[in-house]
Image (cartoon, rainbow, N blue to C red):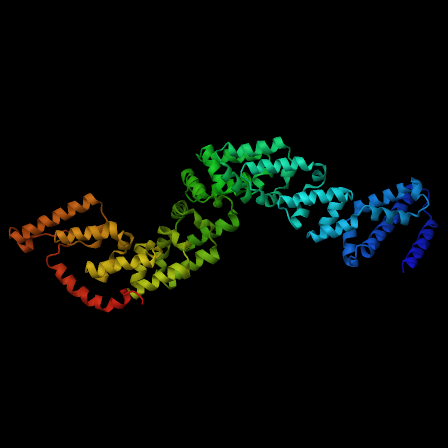
Length: 541
């Protein structure tokens, strides 16, 4: 088969020699070179198949990526004719001899074994001019800094000829310096494969870039994790671009060290463009009524907001909030209060929670905007692990769905508390304070107060002084106001008991209930309700 192909090639060449190319010798030379190039490529593929035991398809695919190397083989084979040892060899024999002596076929097998793709292998061989020893040394060094698999090819593809001109000792010095600044060696492969520019910088350039960040107050740990989280911050941008972005962030009223802490936490900020991303975002936030102080708060609390796309991520969420009845200025206050809202998925997080509140928690269409505006944190809660369990707990107490919706409208944060924290408070309310269920329906904020620090101490004070207040006036006041209210109630009770004031003349404050007659009535009615709730409050066996 090989003899027949060579015979056909000879006839083809003779036939071409007989063609009339006119008086253009340049065209004749180009045709001759093209024929030699095709012959060289066929011989290389034949060596790949016979010597390297590669498949025909793989050999042809790789050969199509080796244009520069095939030209080199062709030129070297032609030059070998001047060497006495090869002067009597045919061109084809010289090509085959050069390919075999270059050890490029075993190198291809070794690179393929290291998980490099054939386009990567072709690129590496072309830029190295087939220098197998140099390629092996560079690949082994990259593996020593934890660059593995196809990432090796990625580095060669992106750095190109620069890596061939670099001394391994110089690159090792850069790696050692980065290690001394907090970038762990086992992170280095990840960093280099995503910021290959580091291998093209001089040592002075690397030190300048590292100092840019450390001068903002970053310690070694912060710097190392920042580079690992976003390797591009170290080498992808020019120093002028980096300084411009830092200065822009400082215009929000942040100090240089504040910006340093911000970048250590969210280095992706350095990847965002000022004109493309930040300026349109600030203009939009200003339209929502957010001033620069609010923007600074959003930046500090959730810097990722300044990294997401405005049109595809932020605008649809704001439109949804407008659709449920929240005004623009209220949306602005919401975003300042809870910036993570803008990073939640509209269709996987925000919309499902709103639908749940409307259909399962009793919140009306009229109140849903108010609930979301007052407690945007609800939109970040898991329905399965938080909201659904809380709703079921409140319904199990005998609260109707409509009443629960009104309670949530009055105090939206009610659904964010852990049920295990709610149970002791409700048990204390019913069994120790002997209060009716209606009390928590009227004042759902009761669950927001500490049982040990506020509810129990104030209840004991009321018992000691034989007075009783509604929960709102018992808890929603400072210690000084509470003491004054208790003192006033005690004085009224003493005047009533002494007979100095007729019962109908004893005016009780609309905000208080003195426990002379009402406490007894409340006690009796509450006991009937408690008998029905024993199973609800009893701990599960």
